Amino acid sequence: QLMREISGVKVLEHQVKEKLQLDKVIVVPGNSDKERRVKQELGKACVSYLKDVIKDHMTIAVTGGSTMSLVAESMTPLNKKDCLFVPSRGGLGEQVENQANTICAQMAKRAQGEYRLLYVPDPISEKAYQSIIEEPAVKEISNEIQNADIVLHGIGDAITMANRRKTPKSQLEKIKEADGAGEAFGYYFDKSGNIVHKVRTVGLQMEDLQKINQVIAVAGGTSKADAIESYFKQGQSNVLITDEAAAEKLLKG
Ligand code: BG6
Image 1 (tube, rainbow, N blue to C red):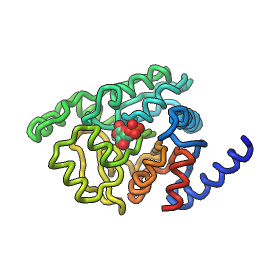
Image 2: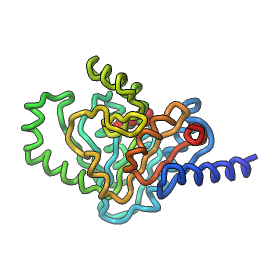
Image 3: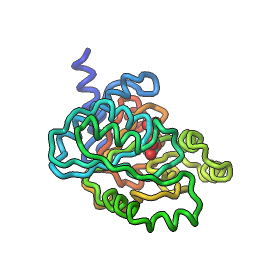
């Protein structure tokens, strides 16, 4: 039974890698929509992949979300010199347990690395935003983020994420009208991968991902298959860690 499961996921890994044109795909058995244990397995797989690629003096930028919080839970000492964890972007409207800052600090502690946080009011007016990005302390950490060596991020269903973040009604309508399917880093994508909405905040911007060698997406569950597909139409991440249920639906779609 176990052997059959293992060879099954290997086939899925290969097919998803071909379909999305990625460098690496890891598939864990099961469906994270149904079992928290499967989401924990995603977390463990992410930590073990991270350990394969991390080197001394690297900076790791992380997003928030329940999947990333399980990555943090699975983290163990990295045994590397001067590894720095930073949140990928400023506040995106998430509750504290789902915020990148919270997860970044937890992850760094477990990894025995350093961390720096990003304090940006959320939501923020245009005027305050324009002045806050000029603050030396904010500039400094933004720089660290934009020069990260590794990015770990979640992908969400667009409407689920917009609701969870208590997005203003007008913006929610805009995302719905544009057929928003996926969300990552506060960017919302339609099925073809076009950006239909973007949360204004500091930190990683979509174009920054191009120069980062390891951009690792962690997302699973049948409910996220369309979101994953829409996100990868833009094709900025090179690694996907997902589960069997999401992979199967992704290959059918
Ligand atoms: C967020 C990331 O914090 O987590 C999003 O910034 C992502 O880009 C989301 O969509 C996914 O959340 P979850 O709880 O489904 O892992």
